[in-house]
Every structure is written in structure tokens, then in C-alpha cells.
Length: 149
Image 1 (cartoon, rainbow, N blue to C red):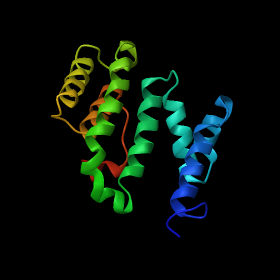
Image 2: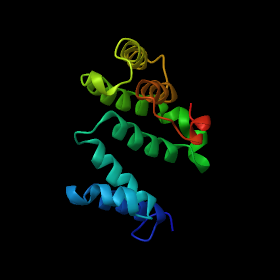
Image 3: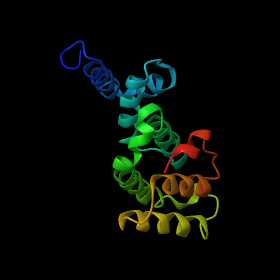
């Protein structure tokens, strides 16, 4: 079944929406404990719209990115990589306003801002955004990063 209420795509979209529309007080629990990855994706997207620390942002963005590089999605990365990088880099543009959450204000912030500016020009990738943010926070990224462009 490709279309209709029993189609896998329809079910997945329904799960994503269910996660995204969870009550705010349950979003973290849904992200941490739910076994349905699509529901977790929805909850993660909703969490990213709130006020978060840099480490929380990186954790949630990493989770979403890891989902972009599994199975057939890996092949299609070039289609959405730049779009996702732009969305994620805007969040980091806001995070740098809270400078003292980063390990070295003098070095990590300029490096992160450079990557953000290059993404806006179309000269950088999602991988570089996440690596720059992780370096600025001194926070490790997972093995999935080997598959990210």
C-alpha cells in the first residue's frame, strides 16, 4: 500500500506529528524513552523550538542527523544537506549569544561563526556545522558522523 491510511509513509508522518504535538512537559520523556523513532523525531523537532543549552541543541541535532544517514537516506543526503545545515546553523547563531557555554570564547566562537557564515554562502556542509559546534562545546559526536556530508 503506497497511499492511504495504512501506508507506511502515512503511519510514519502520523507518528512524527504525535511526537511533535506531545504536551511540552512530556517532550523530553518522549525523546528519551519512546521506542518509536518517528515519534522521537517529532518530539525532538518540538524540543529544538524551545530554549536550550548548546549541549542540548547539539544532542538533538545529532539525533536528527543520525536519522538522515541510515538506509536509503544516506544516498539522498546531497538533496537536503545544505537545507538542514542552514536551519541548524541559524540555531547556532543564536547559541553564540550565550558565549560562556563554550570552552574558549576567543577561539571556539570565531570558528563556529566562520562555519555559520560559510553555510549561509553555500560553501559549507551539515557535517562542518555539527563538528564546529561539537568542538566549541568539547562534546563528542557519534560514529554516524562518518556518513554525514
